[in-house]
Amino acid sequence: MAEHTGVGPDDDPFYQTIEVDTEVTGDDGTYEDELSSCTESVTSIRDYRQEHGRRYHSYHDGRYLLPNDDAEAERLDMMHEMMLMMMGQRLFLAPITDNPQQVLDLGTGTGIWALDFADRFPDAESGLSTPGVFHVPDTVTDNADMISSGPPNVNFIVDDMEDEWAFPEQQKFDFIHARFLALGIKDFPRLLKQCYNNTVPGGWVEFQDWDLNMYSQDGSTNGTSIEQYYNIGIRAYEKTGHIVSPGPFLEQWFQEAGFTEIHVHKYLLPMGPWPKEEHLKSLGMWNLLQASTGFEASALAVLTRYENWNPSDVAHLAERAKLDARDRNIHALFDFYVVYGRRPL
Ligand SMILES: C[S@@+](CC[C@H](N)C(=O)[O-])C[C@H]1O[C@@H](n2cnc3c(N)ncnc32)[C@H](O)[C@@H]1O
Image 1 (spheres, rainbow, N blue to C red):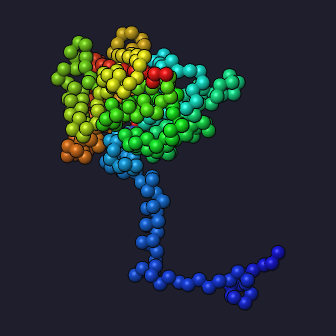
Image 2: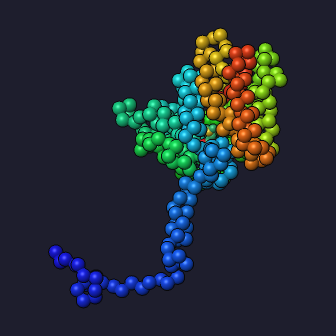
Image 3: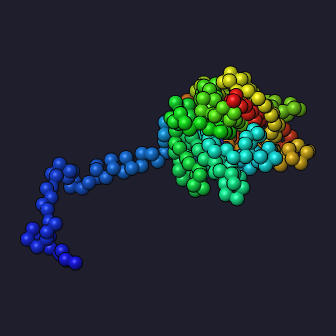
């Protein structure tokens, strides 16, 4: 093989004169400007907003007001465990077929539900076909490093689910699932209509969501800081147009979208291990655990960006709510809804 060691035109057949762009050298003779604009474009999709010690999504910046950092990922994974416990280890209640082909998980977060779903529907031995699990991750999941790597049949998509969906006409879903979209969505009726339009005839859609109106059966939350926390937070989110408590309205929105065979399950979800009954006690413990970072995560952006609060005042409010949640004499409770329906054949 020929060896090309020279740099001159005479001894190197590949030699070509490269003209120097005299424009690129700045006053200080370095490439600072070019380097920084290049770094900016490379990192734009990961250009998360860093604010008051938390990290937020960049795609459609500001669209979703909870963080997408490690602490939030940990909290979402805790809530997944809590849901499995609440629903008897079931990921969903809808009577879907044994071989769903196309499944969509809206607002997937860390992707933990979809990864679990893909695990539970393996193809090979059972002869079932592999479900194609898709996500419309979010805003949060423009956070690729939040998602653990998954099986090849799981595909993550970054999109805003409140925009028009760009799935091709032939790609309708057998099952669409959405969980914990409270505080994230402004127009649930429209979202459910989009779900309907993108489901195969006979396919199912299931939403699992909060009623975030915290209450107690014995009046023990009356006049507490935790009550104040929820009142302030709910009011602020309502002003931004986000729906805070979709749970109780899901049935009506499913009906309006055209679904049939609608089923509603309402669960009681305590905060704290105060119930006597063992199952509810464990659930309450998980709920308390997720709330230990959840109080601040849910309130920080909405109160500092929209209500002009100081971050330290939000921290104080969250801390007082947390102390109340841990108080044995305060028995906070939530309603949680699982609603599913079918697109008629
Ligand atoms: C509380 S997390 C729930 C995550 C996941 N569904 C779960 O159950 O673990 C809400 C998720 O919805 C996403 N989200 C909120 N609004 C969205 C939107 N308009 N488009 C896409 N994703 C959105 C957020 O980014 C976040 O990951």
